[in-house]
View (cartoon, one colour):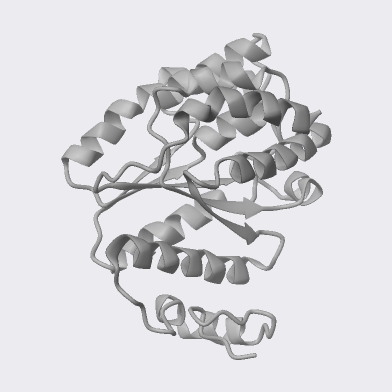
Length: 262
């Protein structure tokens, strides 16, 4: 079923298949299933790019501090009754409203804008109940990310982790939806690989290893955006001595940028 939908949607999105814009500010989205570690990863990225002297701002969706976000929160908790399309319209409105802020960041000279959940969330989660062509239209006028760091976690792991807001909400407690969404993410990344740089990290691993690999991904993006070549111990320089010692104890982490020898 997903393959058939992909073929239909590929035609719809063909008009968007241009190379990523060359604007100075770069947008990096952090994506993944619920409780995959996106909030933590976004903070790691913020600290990393800031340490390199870059001006960094953050966004997170849904933005529960806004009236739109409040309705989204109520829907997820079952306190606001509406159909799935109404919910997706709210999600899209939340992101569309933030385009003003994104443009302001650009004007202010922000180098990197980090977004915890963005358009891929709309496409991947929304596809369970809605037509993908319709979802594509909802995000048509939103600025796409330059890169995505995807935290790949198994649905069963996602369900059993305790989230920021306590008990699982409507989406977090639906294992079939989570499995479908995980597959949908994979299809989306394959489909858009030529226009959005995607780096996948196994988020089932211990948190410190995930952190090291997020830093490694950040280093690759930094090199890509600045043209600089980083030292081989760049990641180790970004963690505490205790964290570095623990990372070295994991022999399967062998990346040069992490600086662990096999």
